[in-house]
Image: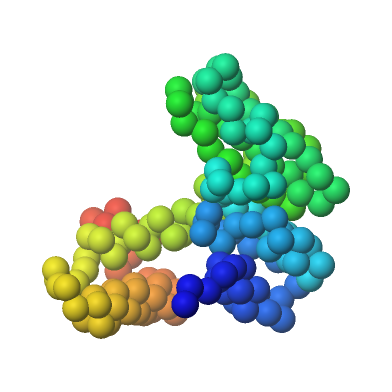
Length: 183
């Protein structure tokens, strides 16, 4: 049997006992009930939204008549939703309980502040995916336990590297290939 609201359950379990933090989540976890529950726990959330959420107003989903690089904001008492059109036919939706104003970044892309903050916080996850994809012990397999085990090894090795470089910051400072060493 498939579990309902699994993303919300996992996010609430992972944030149990925390207060005053900002949680950045992907569209699997982001929901309006999660935002309300985290707000009750004195936490804020920033996350991408799927377009099939029934709470979304239709004005945010429409892309046809909107110009490229335009943003439309919707506000409730505790939540802000932004719809951003980065290119023709593409709509990026984000939910935030941290942002309360329709701030848009100056520059050629005119990104909303919510998207800038989301991208800033998600860069560590993107970097992990990039490193694990580049230096991986995984092999093609149809056996899911083997695939899971290899993924655990990959992430554990990267975490060990991060801890080691944090404890020993000068371990390789004279090397010329520093770009490969940075995380």
